Structures are given as structure tokens and as C-alpha cells.
Amino acid sequence: MKVRFAPSPTGYLHIGSARTALFNWLYARHSGGKFILRIEDTDLERSKAEFLDEILDSLKWLGLDWDTELIHQSKRLDIYRKYAKKLLDEGLAYEAEGEIRSKDGSVTKDSKRITQKAVIFKVQPGKIIKINDLVHGPIEINTDTIKDQVVIKSDGFPTYNFACVVDDAEMQITHVIRGDDHISNTPKQILFYEALGFNLPEFGHVPLILGSDRSRMSKRHGATSIREYREQGYLPQAMVNFIALLGWSPGKDREVLPIDEIIKEFDIKNAKSVNAVFDIEKLNWMNGQYINKFDNQELLDLLMPELKSRGWISDQTNKDWLLKVTGLFKERARTLVDFFDWSGYVFTDEIKYEEQAIKKRIKKEGVADILRSASERLTALKDFTAVSIEGACRELADELKIKAADIIHPVRVAVSGRMMGPGLFELLEVLGRDKVLKRLEQVKKLV
RNA sequence: GUCCCCAUCGUCCAGAGGCCUAGGACACGAGAUUUUCGAUCUCGCGACCGGGGUUCGAAUCCCCGUGGGGACGCCA
Image: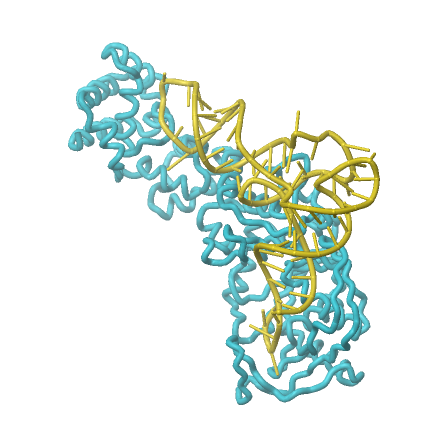
């Protein structure tokens, strides 16, 4: 059993391609087969080394490891030409004057790229091609609807369909799993398999991932590349779990499950045949689930590089303290970026006071007095721990005959500038007495 | 236009003829927690596209319609 993922390095790894890669990988890991990576770089103009690096990085980040060295189609031109010649010799193909087509459809004949006549495969009309698709079941196509197929372009490079067939056959790929958008390529490829005398692999076409308006997911729907999600603070584990659930299900209403479990349960035959809309809200939830599952140390390890590069911490920063901070924000964060957006005031003294927060919690009758009293109590405290802070606050509330919340809310705004955040007593402990007192003093200017 | 694929809550999935007065999750709404909420807990809202068959019985099988998507490059 051998499958492959065959990206062309003409762009970043799209979320849809990532899912195709994942399904191939899962199927291979599930059945103990091989997962091959083949680079389809036969488009001279658009293929770029930087894109290849990007794709490889994304695959590694997702944890999709491949089993052999990379295969580059651009290094196998002789092989494709050999098979093209065979078609020519057997009278199954003919040659045609060179031409180059641009994207807009216009034809140019005088291009430097034209190095030879194109080789074109003759399609016999009136034949029915039958596919027994792993996910769709039987599909039939009449060759009347298929035009003659270019095999070798005028620049000497093979076309996608031809190179794909030659490689899949030579590499003995047993299962070709790819996106639904390739269904119409499959009968063309089968014609090549037959003409070249190759054995047919199994085909499985997985549905597409759609944007919220049900059209193919593209930039206007938001982030489409794996890299972007990585940058936005999503975890690879969550990403893989979420993508796997787009068009497949482990059954028994299970959703959040470790990769081992997914591998164990995965079967391409259980993939759905219907397109799936990508729902960022659910991804957010899933990512939050994974963030919460990490213990503070694991999460801190992920946060560390960014904390350092922001200059928020140094090598001298106390580890236990960092662990506490991490734990404080973990529960609410849905992405790693949330953590940075929400915790800045813990690491620096720059506080962005939210207008609403000041209006609602600070510029109120009596707040100045409450803050002053709170400040006194906190100054007098022997230990500055969450427990003792809570005790002092509640005691003060009793004495002033107000609710504890009337102290808690303004203090939270005073130290963080925000209405929402971690539990106040733990937060104050983590901030430390000096910072807390300073900020209580500082906020008076805003009253 | 031609060909192909698809059709269960707003979204993702469960459902392989009786287990379905259709189940779970996200989102949404309400309540709780009186230390906030973007956290947590509880409850609620909400779907088998339409029409014909087949069958004792259909979300499940067949046909037609409708709707959505994809492909029709010397791109991959």
C-alpha cells in the first residue's frame, strides 16, 4: 500500500491541500503503507523554491512526515519523454506546431519557451470509462466529452495529467487520493494508463473545503494557508484534528481525539462525498480545547520564544512565576495570540485602559475611597498571596458594608485596564505588591 | 453551454430499511456561578430540498425535478 501527496510549488500550502495530504498520510499510517511526497514542478514560470520550502515547513509543522526522499518531476523529464515517444511510435499520439497559451487564453507562437513540437494523445471517441471511486462509488464518463490531450508541451515539459500517470505508475502508487476537482482528470489519466499498459491504481476523490458562501475557499474567505493559521496562534494538533473532521468522522460522536486514535479509526472509505464549509468558530473552540489540555509547562514552552522576542521576559525571569502566569490565562485563551493580547500588562507597565472600563468601574461615586482603602489594606498585608488578598478584600467589604464585587471590579480595572481577565486575587498575587500599589495610585488620575 | 459530483439543524458530523417523536459538537438564546467573562455548568432553539415510486415499513433504496459545487488550459 502506497500513497502520495503531490503539491506543486506555485503557492503556499492551502488548507484544502493540507487536508488531502492529511487523508493520504492517515490512510498510510493506518494501514502501514508508505506516504510519498512528489513535487509537481513542471510549470517553469510559476514554480518557486520559496514556495516549496513553505509547503515542506507546513507539512512538518502539521506532523505529516513522508517516507522517502522528495521526488521532483522536473528531474525526470527523460522518463516522460520516453513514454511520450512510445505513444508516438505506436501511433497513439501525434505532433503539433508549438504554441504557448497565456492565462487569458491568447495564443503566442513566437516564444523563447517553444523548443519543440507538442506531443498530443489521440482520444478515441465513443468509449465509456468506468471508475470505482473509493469515496464516490461508480462513476462513468463517455470519451466523447474528452478532447485530445497534450502529453508533452512545446517547452518540452510534460503536462500534469501525463506526468502524474507516469509517476504514479512507476512509483507503484496503489491509492490515488486527491481532491474532488480532479474527478474530471481521472478518465483522461485512465486513458494514459491503458495506452501505456500500466496497472490502474484505486482512486479516491475527497470533497472540497468551501468558504462560508459555499464557494471554493479562497483568500476572500480569510486565511487559506496553513502558515497563516500557524501565525495566528493555532496549534498543529488542533488544526489536524479539525481538518480531519471536515469530511470524516470517527463515529460515536467523538470529536476531540489524539492523533493515534485518529490514525486507528481512519479509513478513506468512510470519507464523506459532500463538500464541507470551513467554520472558523469551531476551529477556535477546538484550539481552545487543546490549549487547555496542555499543562502549564508545555504551554509555556510554546509561548516562550514570542515572550522573549517581545522583550517581555529574559533568561533571568523566574520560571515558577512564568508558570503561574501561563496558568492564569490558559483557561480562557483560544489561540496562542490571545495569550499575548491579554497578558501584556502582567509583563510590562504599559496599561491600555479600556474606555468602557474606566467609565463603568472607575469614574463612579465612592470609587476613589474604595481604592484608597484597598491600597491601605494591601500595604498592611503580611503575605501577598491570593488567599490573604482575598481575605483582606472581603473583610474590607464587610466593614464598608459593600459587596466584595464593588472592590474587585475597580481594582481589576486599576491593575489591568480591562473589565475581563483572570480571577482577581490570583492576578494580584502574580503581579506582586509593588506593581499593584503603584497601579492603584496611578489610576487615581483617571477618576 | 457541455460533462461530472453532491443534497440531515445556520455550520461540522452521527445515521448502512424498523433502534429516529432523528443523536452529538460549534454557533446562538436563557439561567446558574454573585470575582468579571471571552471561562465553567445546566437548559433551550434548531434539520432529513420537493415530487413520485419500491416496501408491511424510507432520512436511509430507485426515478424525476430543484438547488449547490466542480471540471472543461501546451496550469497543476
